[in-house]
Image 1 (cartoon, rainbow, N blue to C red):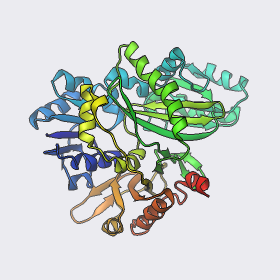
Image 2 (image 1 turned 90 degrees about the vertical axis):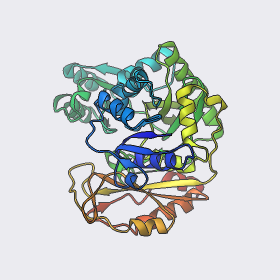
Image 3 (image 1 turned 60 degrees about the vertical axis):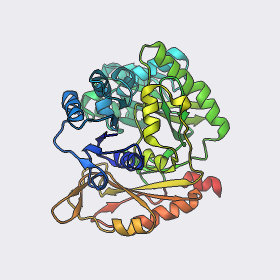
Image 4 (image 1 turned 90 degrees about the horizontal axis):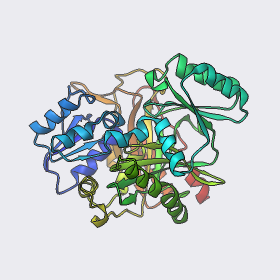
Length: 425
């Protein structure tokens, strides 16, 4: 089979590795890909990922049998619908189903309508009314831009002054563009966060290994939100009993709801959860694999990813085996100094081969190949993954790899998986 992978980050590199391992994979293409992906696939530059017609044309030219969509933008832009209209199988939700991520207001409406547990919230498109609301309410808030903001459109506030400042940032200063024209203001839930991804064909739901992301830039979960500074799986907070509760109260009702709404959901459903004293509640839904969660989840998948994706697209996931390793995986993101604020590019990267020789996986996220060297080209540069019998050993393996890689201004958190290690202790 010829497979087209859309995207060029660390998540897509992890997908590319797993897709390349399938005996069903003939020629693997990636658009635009990255230097890491280029080692196992043919990368194609110059195609606009928001141009559905161009992506369909490329798929037809390369005689693609399966398209795999990584980022959220093409999904919410309807690329899966465009592939379907052209008779090309694709893994991912339709435009209507992907609105679960494309609009936080829509996701909240669905949860409210179908009784899926989440935080109390209000929606505003008028900044004046929003300011009055946060001045009147006492509890801390999570203030969210309605639209896509590359995983960064959420500001957590503790006081009314902080909330007003956040509203100004999102709605007045347009820090997240038009995504902030409308906001969701919700109670700030407390508890432990966990990411639960699941394969689904619109009816059958197969949860993946639960993972925990580290959104804050600095150790101890301090500093600004980022796209993710590291992750680990499986997350011990997700016990078998809790998983069954999440399946019964959140996943099953959500998939059934999307059917009733005429937007059957197929592909990967990402559910961000807060484990509160009242039970699990939804923080957010994403319409695709998480980043960097994918970098620790897929290395633990022992079944054929191509077979699973085809089953999701064709509606026979119930007959498709999905098996997981009993090991653990930990990803440490190596970022450019200054991220998520301004940062320099073009810094030479060395030591990746040494990290691989030590037994680590190294996923490229923001790198670029010049004539004679590999250089930094983004905020999150690399994801270094250690896999071992347990979390503690996987942490040690990941940091062993990190210590072998160098570039000017490199930054990474030194406490990835600290919650899991505390539980073990």
